[in-house]
Amino acid sequence: MADHLAPAGAPHAAGEHAADGTTKRDFLILATGGFAAIAAGAMAWPFISSMNPARDVLALSTTEADIGAVPVGGALTLMWRGKPVFVRHRSPTEVEAAKTVDMGELRDPQADSARVKPGKAEWLVVIGVCTHLGCVPLGQKPTDPRGEFNGWFCPCHGSHYDTSGRIRKGPAPANLAVPTYAFTTDTQIKIG
Amino acid sequence: MSIGLHNSAFKNPVIRWVDSRLPIFSMMQNEYGTFPTPKNFNYFWNFGALAMINLMIMIATGIFLAMHYTPHVSMAFDSVERIMRDVNYGWLFRYVHANGASMFFIVVYIHIWRGMWYGSYKAPRELLWIIGVVIFLLMMATAFMGYVLPWGQMSFWGATVITNLFSAFPIVGDHIVTLLWGGFSVDNPTLNRFFSLHFLLPFVIFGVVFLHVAALHITGSNNPLGIDVKSPADTLPFHPYYTAKDSVGMVVYFIVFACLVFFAPNYLGDPANYIPANPMVTPTHIVPEWYFLPYYAILRAVPDKLGGVVLMFGSILVWFILPWLDTSPVRSMRFRPIAKWFLLLWGISFGVLMYCGGKPPEGIYVVLSRVATLYYFAWFLVILPVLGRLERPLPLPESIAKPVLRGGGPLPAGAMAKPMEKA
Image (cartoon, each protein chain N blue to C red):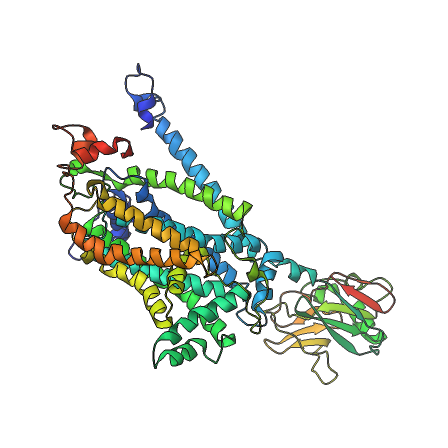
């Protein structure tokens, strides 16, 4: 069709750009295809976007808690974004154990000081989801096994975490994640 | 090619490998590429393709809405409001889905009207037409159950009224209604099953549409002249001629659709459906969605419960026997000088019923509904069968190609009447 729009004097419409073998029709097909691709992308976008967290889900993405009542050696489990967050009130010996570990022994080397807030070394806040395949490790309750490093022990596949929540033994590849959080007062924390 | 493999005409080795074993590429090429299609289609022939696109839009938006919807009486309404306010682009899906239902009925009503005007239901396309009526009934059931899901006042009372229609049947009526409800009123079990069926039926429709298209590709398309294709000169390959023509219609369709969705998303809806369902209070004026109004008017036109229900269902069931009610050998209304006016009047009676269905059942509206209902059935059961024998149709063109190409002798009067209609 488009070829018929070529100037009357052209020897053969399709041969107008014969030097490189392209024609107006090639251009039209490419332009149409290009627009179709853009339109398909524009249509797909809202569908994909709708599967992301909705606004009411995002609005629930902070959790506040008073941790003042947790005794030394005790723990508290909070819920944040549908996941457990472990808060542990560490004893001085536990803090010391976490600080003095040789970095060479760690699979995911990270100093204890990088995992707690300055001046708040007795409080460890980590997401209670094993970095292996997402189970919740044991160790929050006094009766729970805490593993060989006195932190947490994941019963699913046997990962051991230390008193800083770092992976020490077992299949998990990384330390328990530290969520974004802040102390709003001495005993209040806000996660998220 | 060795025995057992399809002899593929494709050159690309990968396509050829697949096509030899499962000739889907050949099928697409035969059915949508080179498929010989009458060359004289007008824009009425866009609406089948538009309906197909509409069905796909409804299924796509519906699946994503179902990801966020909760089919429970205490949560359904709020979950729909959450879709509107919190879910990313949820408002877009809901408005596209709700207005998509209206667009679907607009498109399908025009598609059916096209079939009636050009006699597409006549031999050899009777089964094609019957499958189409089945699709329409499935669409109505799907649309009705979908309207119940937001669990607003109109959802609830629409469901109550429509399910109660079945109580009109003697003896078994009440048992049928209890069975439909799963209880003693429209309640959570009803909502749950309606959601389940509303999800299922579109895929059933998809399957029946496949049969509709399969049957179409056996008989081939009808055309505005209503005469058979006689030679290759009467046809064009579907692609690029009708893919291009369908694309033009698609652009217009999307403009109308977009105007509804973005500028008047609630124009065709009922404000009462933004009030959560209350089983204790019936709204003063219950109306179904616009596409059900003609049948609703027929229901209310009859002063007898069972009679009204029977006529209402009958108004669509009569379409099933339309191929045998029409006794004229001529398909297209272009060559039926008397019948075309009666059919036009039937279209007007349908419009009058649609208008009256949305008005309160009193005074002039009842009279109008009764007259229109009478004519609605008179057309099918009296005028069509009788007129086919009495009417003298205009002379038919020799072939599609003759009037189109202006060749081969004098033009038949019918083709002369609307020379511009060849697009």
